[in-house]
Structure formats: C-alpha cells, structure tokens
Picture: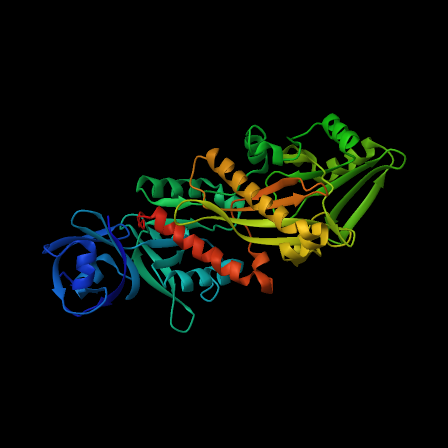
Length: 455
C-alpha cells in the first residue's frame, strides 16, 4: 500500500476521468493502469485514468467525478491505494458536535475549537463539522460545516466520513438512545468513531484498581459509599473527596475533613462562592449531604485525600492532555499545572485557580529534581492511558488526566476525562502544545482511516 501527499485540482471535463501527474502515478504504481476505482469517504466511482505532464504530485478530477462523489474542495489531501486498482483520497474526518443551530455559532461554546480543527485539518485532509441532524442515512451524506475564505461557516453536502471525532457536548446527549443508535450506524459501516462517550468515574476507578501496573497510582476509592464507609475513610485519612461519579468542572465536589478535637468540616462551592461549614458530629455532616442531594448520593464516589505539593499554601495538581499519534501510541502532548484558589475545593480555573507551566510548579516544589519528577509523571500518564484503553471496548485516542504529586514525589491519578477541556492551552507558554494537540488528532485520524505511512 502506497501513501503520498498530493494537490487535488478540479477540471471542467464532464466525463468521469481522473488525470494524474507522472510522479504521482509512479509513486502509486499506476503507470500501466487505464481504469481505477476512486474513493472519497463512503463514496466510490469507476473512472478512466489518464497521465498528464506536470512536475510534482497532482490529481485532476473532472466535474463528472467530483459531483458524483461530493469532493468538498480542491487543494492538499493524501492519496493512497488500499487495494489494487482503488485510489482513495482523504481521509475524510467528521467532527461530531451539537449546539443551538445559530448560523454564526452552531456549536455553542465549542465553536472556536471546531473552527481551529477545520482550519488546521483542511491543510492536509478533508475535515468538516456536523451535528446528528445533518446526516442523511438513506443517501449516506452529511450536510456539513466548512469554513469559507472569510472564516465564516459554509454548508456543503459531503459523503459520510472515514473517521468521526466525537465532541458531543453533554452526558445527557452522549448516553441518549438516539446517540447510541447513531454510533451503531457508524460502526456497522466500518467508520471509526472516537472518543466513544464521557467516562464514568466509578467505572474508571474499578477498572484501574485491579490493574497491576496502574492500580498503584489511584487513591483508595469507593462507589456509593455507606455512611460507615465515609466515617472510616475520614478516621483513617483525615480528609477525603466526595464527588459525583458523572460530574465535571468540579461541580458537586466536597472536601470532607475530620479533626478529632474539633469535629467535621465540609468545604464546597456554592452559588455564593467557596463555603466552609463545621459540624460537631458525623451525623450532622451526613444530614447536610443528604439534605442537599437526597437519593443522588448513590451516584457519588469517595476518594482518599492526598497531601499535594503546595505553592503559597495552595495545593497544585496537573492536567495531562494525552493523545494517540500516527503510530497508535500514547503521549503526553500538553501538561498544565493548576494552583488552587484560596479556599477552593478544586484547582479549576473558574473557581479561582491559577494556570502555570509544569516547570514553574515543579521547580518551586522540587528544585533540581523537577525534570526527573516530570518525566516519571509523563511515563505514569502513558501507563494509565494504556490501562484504560485495555479495559475499554471502544476506540480511545484522547484522554485528559488530573494528576497529583505529593511531597514524597508519589504520583496519583484523580480523574480521567474522555473529552478533556482545553483551558490549559490558553497559557502563553502552552500554545505550541495546543497546536501539537490538534496535529496529533489528525495524525491519528490518518491511522484510523487506514492512511498508514508504512513506518
């Protein structure tokens, strides 16, 4: 199988003809062919093949070809031969999301990121964005979003993609019967679909605690703990985190503390800001939690509190943004250090946290040993990603880890997110990593779409 990078052009010929430069024909081994099957996404068409004299690697598609298979644009794309006599251009990548149907901001808060994906991806392949309502399953087409020359969205009818990148915005949407049916339809057509859905904290902890390599990095954690379990954890660890299994952005998290001579404390974020309450007895603490959440507590997990490294008396944790690359290997592409705000339960930026580079944070904590600690943390993140992937039945290619490091240099994994936010890339020193993150997404789309480099 050959893979090469080419310039795709449109010609006005009405016949179904593909014109190819001699250099491209030789690299694909097509010098003796006169007929091929041309494939784009799910669409295939028979076409005559004719050589043209032009230096470089060029592919000219007649109007009869491009209208039949819905080629969305001219310009750069990969060309390869998945089998003898078949030429595939692409890959075609669909970014799946949803939003308010606004013409200028069709994907809500994710619109800016999706524009970045379309700008960068279309320098190498065919990338479009779409919502579930844009699919015509009978015709196997999508009424998709592209970017016009002025940066505004334009709509085009295109074939179903080779690869779907799932950025649906909410758990409710992700786990709806409609979305489950949507995923099944893609899989039945052998269309790669990543990332499958939001993670459930309980599932991840249960998978990792029994993993020989990864289990040692997960704090003691229990799902739906009884009051007796919560009290035992507080007496042994002195503080714990009590959080919703399907939560995000730090919402609904409590830091519970026990001081034998003073009582019990609950710290959490409410609409008025960070709140700290004191309770004389464990029973009164549980009464507060039950009054605030009722039967919803059955969806909570409890986790051992870890004494993290601190700066100015505020704990620090780290977001590791993990990607699969073009060779199907995990790597930590972006790492941000998050310093908790005063009195905050979490290090989330919107709760008063401060974003730093890992070098800044670890340098303050460990001095000359900071580089060694960071390298061990990167290796740990790869071990954790591989372990989650091994226990997961669907394609994963992007994971965000919230990782902590204690004063003894021990590394802990607190959270794993299958659709990590990108706030760390807003730091001026992490913008290069933000661009690398996007590049990794498309390198892995080449792999998933079958456009292997043969390396």
